[in-house]
Length: 454
Image (cartoon, rainbow, N blue to C red; front, side, top):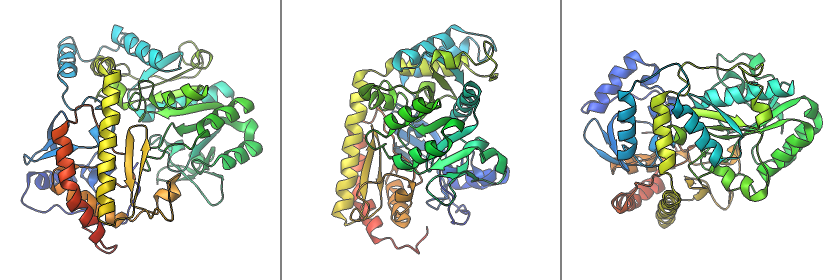
């Protein structure tokens, strides 16, 4: 989630189709966008309106080409408009767009998720927010408890109870982080610093018998790429088990992107622990609105219609979305994941080398094949481990870097607090274009001053 900034609302300059569209959008849509980070508030300037995508490239309404390093914030594992995904979706559309009944595709997508992960059953929904909201309701219903433990900087969608900000102290009851969220909605949320095992133990020592669940991003991508320290997720799983709470691993972002089994394939599968519930999204929809939550059979059996915990959705398991997701997952072979790792590694090292050559203080971090640079002084912060560390970035340097890359045809996440994404379609031409853009962008970051807003 994009942190709020003090930048004034951008005004659309004249002379481009994107500028004209943004001016029109501002009249009919709050902020001119349908998700806040797209508005460029964190970097300044006018957002680019895209008209098409192909492979690793985006094309805006002015005809400019960009190497895409957000990939729709994760779903496009195979790149834009992959021929087999497009063909499958076109054939599915010709059979009907929505039925409101069970379909074979729902069963096959659920089976594919179960095959790739440690969950026994899944329930399909439409968004990641819906998945995490439903998983928490289920955890509360299963345990008969109310308290939810979450971590500062981990984003789990925009449901009221999860829009909780930390107060003072190491572990605090949540305060609403957005107007419109009642205090009562976050009063049962305990907010803890990420990667702080001692703070989690303190919470369980104080409230262990009241805690319904702990929810965490399997690896963080919403404060930049911040991986859990070794053993952190394993400790969360153990503490939940010892105190009768449920451990919810949010893999909406990392699920099926960083490995065939998501981030759990990197830590849980190796360390020998299993979350009680998991949430999925993005890649499993192949670019369409689709998400899911799943877990242990005894927990999932508490869902309606077999159990008392209600959850439902008219477009859940939509046949177009399930087609796109199923096709994407079936095409996500070991070779695809190897290519993702290779491309991410190449780009990350190119970025670090360019910034280093320009004398820009930074660290580059990984969470599987998610990565991002942090514009921090490595002498002070050698490893970014939590949101407090990430917040100490020189944001003016990122803004200058972002716009210099954009001007040269490379589209980065328009916020310093987001992970970068690649696809298996990123080819040598795309990598060469990134490499050519980096020296000028690094020089712009080096020359940037804190009082210079674009």
